[in-house]
Image (cartoon, rainbow over all chains, first blue to last red; front, side, top):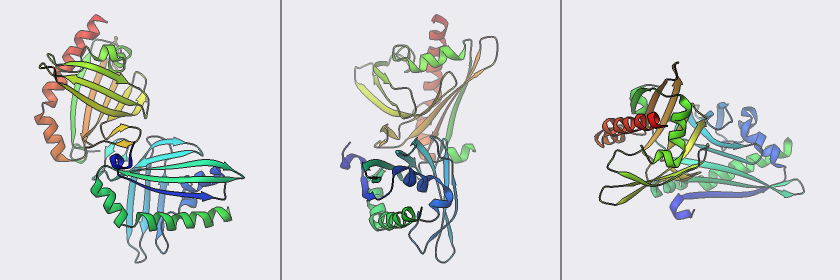
Length: 155
Length: 155
């Protein structure tokens, strides 16, 4: 797998929290609402059927109050270790209007209760990768990671 | 799920064989070679890692001897009941050059050792569905189903 072939965007962080907490923040709808969109956006609804083939619906609300539903399906779930999901399906296995990306969240224990966090988005085309980058992948996912770190400190 | 929304092509057959034999014909590379392309095409190689997230490589050989590799990933595997796979990934979870279809094979026991066989292909776009139809979905999958019935009779 090369970056060229998979049109990959990647965010790496280290969190001062064990993998279990991070996995929980990703999979518990109430917790996800606290960090998963850059503020002042909010999450008005989150339904997460966290298992391979399970569907997710995350509704992002703009500061003006407009709702943007995001549907996806989990492709792979390893508790406390790995989550893979895509927007290519809206449920198992109904094609979405536009297959845009596949995201992987990898959690690695690096000792002392700390975790290496690797969030990767791969795309089907170079153009979609570029669009995602211009939509603010690095700032957006980075700001969310900051919000996640704040949440982890409170958990 | 409606046909319109999923750009669906479908083939339904009844086979005079139990589900177990059909599942085996789909998942054992040696057996798959006997029926999975319309003759006089052949399968020169088949590697099937039959589990959710497992990769498949099926190399179809034209009568002129040219090889056409087809890569995919299984999304869902229920032994003797259901197989779902897609060409949207070449392995877990590397995007393919072109996500074209997701196929489901459903095996239903209808008594007396007989099985209802439903093979479905859904596409991301109406255009891809049309292309697949024009490539000969109905004749091709139909002819393969005939070859599968012949194999089942010999098994």
